Length: 429
Ligand SMILES: Cc1ncc(COP(=O)(O)O)c(C=O)c1O
Image (cartoon, rainbow, N blue to C red):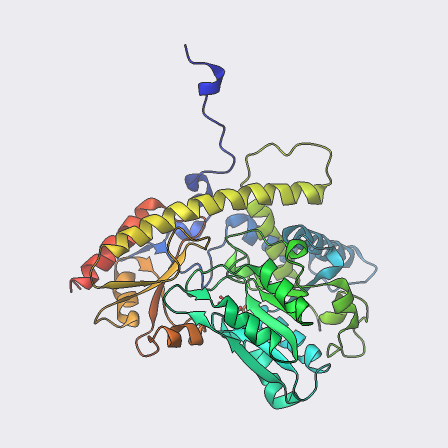
């Protein structure tokens, strides 16, 4: 007779089929084939609940803020609730959460404000692994403020940051800020951000973290990382096109943001400008709630609603990580068998995101992507604005093909893309 111990553990999160049912885009067909979306690192699909929440805002609550009538008060409350949701997502406080159009604009805004405190000869350290949205805003200070930007190297063979070089870059100059990515959108490398932030602080520098590619795959914890700033983008985790910035309270309060007079000078609004994208912010918060709603684990009692939300997110991100590891391994191992394929990024045994890049010998990445699209497989190609990564890999001319797994990716889709790349590598149209 089976003992109670033989009973299978109840699932801790929704199955892939349950998740897929939430995404109308997954019903799309191309050339008679179901579409498999491997373009998540460029932008993820959006579940029904997020779109519904945005439509509901626009249909029933749309107004400008801070007025004495119900739709305005509802807008105020929805924006405040969205800040609380993102505070739980980031492990921050609501007044440390800033909204904006996208990560790039928010980073540019912080770079302008930080730049005002810098003088000729001060240094900023960026990394070769980074998306240029976390490089060029800092480089613009070279021109404007006489600041020197140093780039910490990546190791092309492993796709990892060269930590000795980072250490040298931080300590050998008058470094005032480290700008570093939590994960590479080209290779899936995950950086040890707590370590990098500690190194930056040790050198007397602030730490600005680009978590755009990290956010869909691992749960951010700004308190654990102790970073001064962090930016991410909701369209990479099933939300609309809205950027989110975290800033430590004292930093948000003291930086000289370009603020126009009618705007409040209190945090977090002093770091924002103009009328916000209300429906986008509401939708971005709905994306976090969608993710939390994938948890099937009991909440446990005795905690606040925000703590319960963070607990659910922890469960879900653990589950997504496990699934992502399995999918990435299947993808990597399948592609590694194809002789003409060269894979880039850390191996599946590394702590990473389920994103990899590759080249097929003799076929430009744009052509591989076009042939995959004919087979109903959508994947990005080029440099993904991680220009330096692609340069260091010697692939600037032909570019890389990038495959990213998302929460809705199935093993069958992975097998499909492996088979399709095998055909392309063998010269089958
Ligand atoms: C790692 C990384 N950083 C920054 C960005 C820029 O984000 P946004 O499009 O929100 O400006 C991207 C976008 O692809 C990215 O992948």
